[in-house]
Length: 141
Image (cartoon, rainbow, N blue to C red; front, side, top):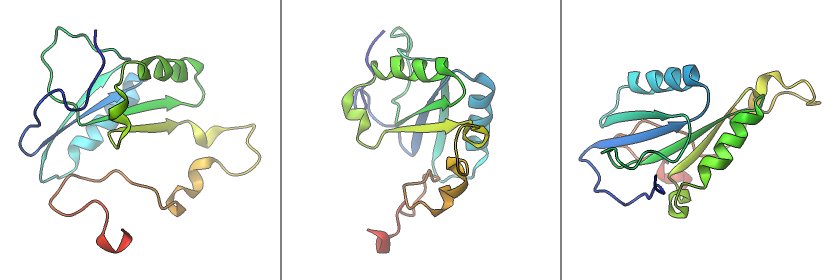
């Protein structure tokens, strides 16, 4: 069992490997399937894990992005992510880690609309297909 480091292996040519970490297997599989259906110029590989650390005796490819999936209705889900974060090198957090929060549409104690209803209005980074075009248009830089 070891700490994941972003540059511990050489990158593959025109390939990207994403690691989805979360407690809900069906959701992770659905997310992986939808990502793999997208037409990309590069080869996309998606691996699933319930938690970190990953076994160190397995030969695995370089991981380019880690996505932690948190269910707002499960304390175990949040605790699992908190414990898994201890096994990720701090340099991964420079653009190679993301958090996907689920369950926000059903919050009963929230006074206003669910947090996700205005997500389209946000100007934050969005997941995109790896292709020849830049992820952020030059006019937005």
